[in-house]
Amino acid sequence: MRKKIYAGMLLLSLTSVLLVSVALSFLFYGQLAGQIKSELHDNCVFLERVLRRSEQPEETLRSFSPPVGDLRVSLVSAEGHVLYDNDADVRALSRHADREEIREALETGQGESTRFSTTLRTQTHYFSLKLTDDLVLRVSKTTDSIYGVFAGVLPVVIGLVLLVLLACHLTARRLTKSIVAPLGGVDFDRDDQFYDELAPFVSRIRQQTRQIAWQTEELEARAETLTTITDNMKEGLLLLAPSGLIVSANKSVLTLFDKQPDVVGRPFRALSRHVELGRRLEDALAGQHGELLFELGGHVWNIFFSPVPTLGALALFLDITERARAEKRRREFSANVSHELKTPLTSISGYAEMMENGMVSPGDVAPFAGRIRSEASRLIGLIEDIIRLSELDETVEKVLEPVDILPLAEEVIADLTARAAAHDVRLSADCAAFSLTANRRMLHEMLYNLIDNGIKYNKPGGHVTLRVVREGAQAVFSVTDSGIGIPDKDRDRIFERFYRVDRSRSQKTGGTGLGLSIVKHIVAYHGGEVTVDSREDVGTEITVKIPD
Image (cartoon, rainbow, N blue to C red; front, side, top):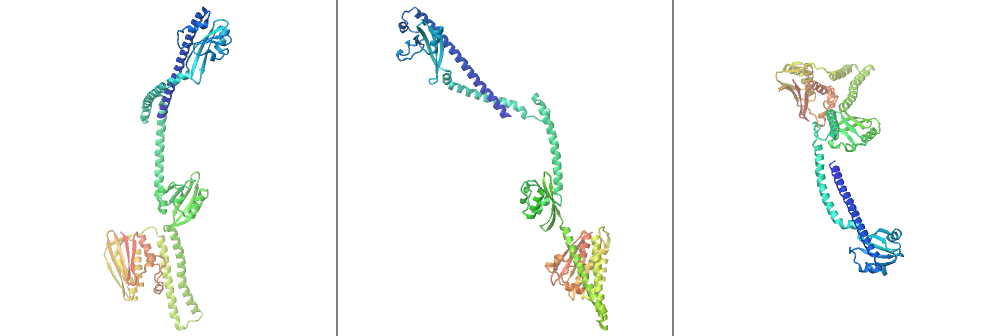
């Protein structure tokens, strides 16, 4: 605006100066031409009066000195021959019969004309009077043409124009500043009075400013709310523009692909170059829904692709790692249960069939019956453990009570003393006397399984030690044995259902492979944690920490 006002004022001033200069030049030149014509008329009339009394006009003109020395005087016959000229040799002059001023003088008694010389940039004014029927007196004067006048005064005009231009420049700047200054200092929050003509405009701006401010605050609040929601979502959220550029990616998506927020505004290939993922995103941009299982970073993601009209496409990343693992464990559990149940049932069926067909001598009936009883006992124990795991899986409500730890530990040791003696393993306990808020039956089962495992996988003459202490607001249960230990490759899997480090030993000792799985569930039920420290052929220490 400032530039437009300044340019407009400067152009107006300059144009005005130029137009006034041209108009004055033409005005002054017109007055000068009129004076010259008047001068020619007066001198011509004066000479005509003189020559009327002369019988020899040519001789009179030669002897007569005109009152104005720069006038050219000519005497022309009716045929156009120049009889006298005070500025040129008449013998070198052509006939003047066709000259306008001569022709008019012969016809009307007087004539005048003006002729321009574009080469010399001059013009000559002529005035003629008819003396007699045979003679015409002509007086002329040469001056600069209007172009010549302009050319002559051009340097002065240019100088004046530059001065005026400078003055206009300074004036335009000052006026522009004074006009625009109030506009630049307008405070739309107050009712400032400046130009009355702009009052409706300013009022409208104030209204729109308040409306825009309110809408901006509302949009910012919505955007902040949406950002807070999406950034705190465990699920990943990715939004693409129709062009394939990333419009939005929440923290879960950025963390998944290990990217920074600067990927926003770039093609989705900057996020991941996974071929199938890219193809599904392109299908979503084309208007197709889709779904994809995607594994990355040790997690399993179920990705849903949806087209968003006018906005592009949306991809929702759901972390189904735990569900996938649970499904895998369920399948493995089903397969293991089938296998574990089939083994003792096959043995029982085989022994029974042999006895039924009379293939067993009377002396072997008792050993065969003992084997059938042993396999049945193993089957019953397996079924009981499976039922117990199912109960723990379905247990939601916690049933807790104050439990005296020392009597509980002594009870477990007493229950397993005979079993330890049968395996030539020595049991010992070092337990502090304190109370813990827990489920007593589950704690008993947990300690029983841990100590029982220490007995099963021990060496003849070995030992198992139970140590229970209170550390701050938690109880620490530690079961240490001098058994075969756990290889490093199996250490992370011992809590899986039916997983056995030494399968042959488990079969001999009647282990089901579910004991440590039950322990893990009981610890999780109490919100605790379990750790394992083991060395092969040296022994194992399993530590459980349960908060009070």
